[in-house]
Length: 138
Image (cartoon, rainbow, N blue to C red; front, side):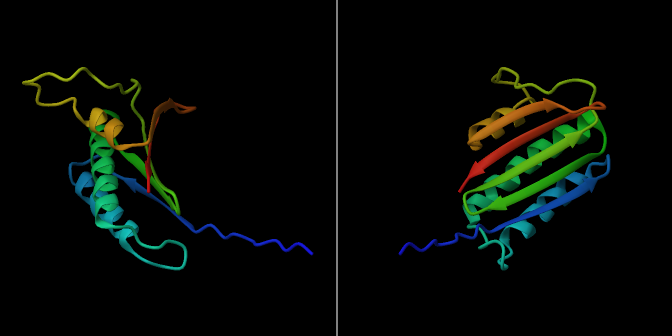
């Protein structure tokens, strides 16, 4: 006789709409760390290192979105194996990773995200704008 063991995956999702203002970046960091740190029935609560990495990713992506595309949407999805961060903006241009320079004061954000993330992609959104997604392995 065979029995099937049903595996239950735990996951949680949340979405925030952030206005086009400088305070949105700090608010996004706070919302992210609170969401990822909370233990509940669907998530186990992440360790400080993973929360720190995810919060840094959110900070960089929301900074770019509000600077270049106005208001933005932040989506977070956490599962047993990964944290997915998606930021949507209304920018007509496509974001890109610029070559790093010794004295440059900006342009490092997407390079940092690319180094931290297991997967990183940028897609155009129907109707205009971009979706930047970073997946952090747990």
